[in-house]
Image (cartoon, rainbow, N blue to C red; front, side, top):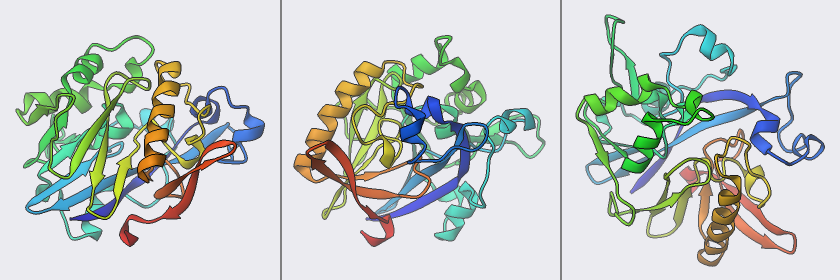
Length: 279
């Protein structure tokens, strides 16, 4: 098995929203905000090469939205999904499986692209099976008013209409090297891949722990639908992760790909910084 970091670029989100009840005087030291109170965040995906399968976990924001939409999120950086795949010698046609942790636009926007005539949509990964879970799919396609802006139908519906969508049930292993942890605080039935390489166990933390700054228990995003559920899920997850020496892979940390986990007198903290290429 080989793992590849897939950087798809950076975007900005409000610092207060990203850190919830934590005061700016504290979080601003961790990820300094600009004059508009916006902090820069990665959209870091992960590619797993295992046998004849290429499994892409999440796929970033995509490029099919209009200028007004993108102006809200201040896209920056030179990375893109296409360039990152090419860097490792792959194309979109090579991907066999797309695992979607959840369907917020910054995690699944790259699933679908404009067709050549620019009058409709087609799959970015035409040879891939797209994996979600039925409970979250229903949640995303019938969204509540608070979360509705995060679920864009053009990112979601073409996948189902294509016939390439499959659902994972809780307790199932979609791939031999991957278990799936379901969590419900950030959004309904978000899936965290737990990847066993034989040497290490790596958890793709998605939006349960989006960055190293979010490892401590109280650091919970205001975006979470059920923050107290997130608190319970984090505590349980971090306890297990510390016992089993899991490594964490961060989707949104602007600087750090992966770390170990430390349990200190003050609680859980991110440990040594690592790169997937070094594992």
